[in-house]
Image (cartoon, rainbow, N blue to C red):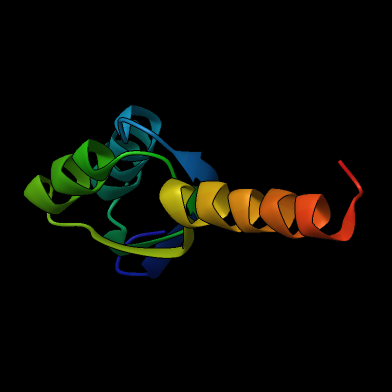
Length: 83
């Protein structure tokens, strides 16, 4: 693992705690860890904590986007009479 570039992939990040622990372990093993790809970013604080550890976070979705999309779908269903 020494000298290899590793990208951490995670499903959900809220506080970033598990990603930080994983990055630390990988770095101690000699890996170069700078990037994290996640599906759902639940809280901006997680991003801030990861950035403070020198990690760049790439998220597919932010929780507020998913909530907004769900609300839009709910509103559309109400308009169509599918409540």
